[in-house]
Image 1 (cartoon, rainbow, N blue to C red):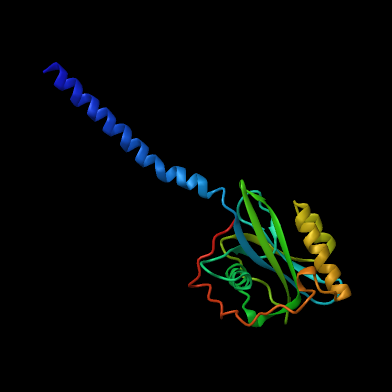
Image 2 (cartoon, helix red, strand yellow):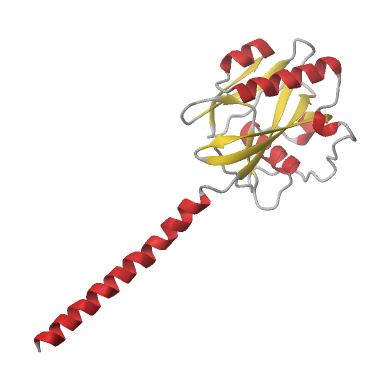
Length: 201
């Protein structure tokens, strides 16, 4: 009888251990997914003539950095589709409000929250003066010239990006990614911020 009781307790202990392992598997999978690379896209928006004013948005979460509108891909979006959708979600600007530059594109890769992150940036000029409509992702916006924009940035990569954008506007020289041909923006759907679900970082 004693042996039977011991055996029963033993089997219960084994069952509990197996349950703990099974419950722990999703967490392990989640940790592994955090190491995967992520991709995002955004648009450098400017207005006026030189000295141009660039639109910067202040994040609503630490470290409250300033950046152009951007965000992660949603489903099987292309880079430009993600950039246009995220811009509408974060500013209210639709494709008809600005003109995309067909000879400028820059890709940045860096580490964010322990993961490799690639962000593709396009550039667009506002067709008329219009301020953005802030979403819950941002707490403020500014239209600023290049010097003031660079004073707000926390990372060298963002400084390099805006210097490249300014040089492009002055010299009208295609960026390295656009040396061979103009960018194709024919696959941009009509953005709808009500139905889209972007993720930020």
